[in-house]
Image (cartoon, rainbow, N blue to C red; front, side, top):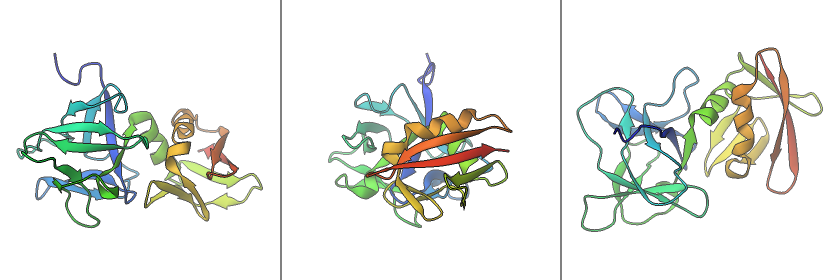
Length: 202
């Protein structure tokens, strides 16, 4: 049976607010802001990435020959995950480096070694919220807000409104199912108080 049979596909958001991507010229990993026209080129399959340690393989949307190291997914108490290599004598972890290619040489799990697994439902929602042609976003006073952007340390911003992503993650899923011509109230939190946004699907 294929390792992906019956499993879900997940993409990875890093500490810098960027998704893991494949450098097609060099056949290696880097990260970039979410492309509103296409899914990121790196993903993995899992049942539930937060359920416990599990061996996983990073997959490429485009088939290129260079394999990635075999990895073990390590769920963290924060709701994020890390990835440990399985073919090294000493523990080594996958690490994101800003504006550079990723490597698998980190000796410890710190901020740059942490990732948020994003399933297809949430990825689709984030792409919609990042495209003004597909959604418009307002506060409860009717003021227009900028499209969603990811920033450092797993934060999202809508113009001047900055929100932690993890406490709000599940709430974003409903946007993936918003029918064109309809709107919905998106109930979020800034960590201290409730934040209500209105999202209209075009």
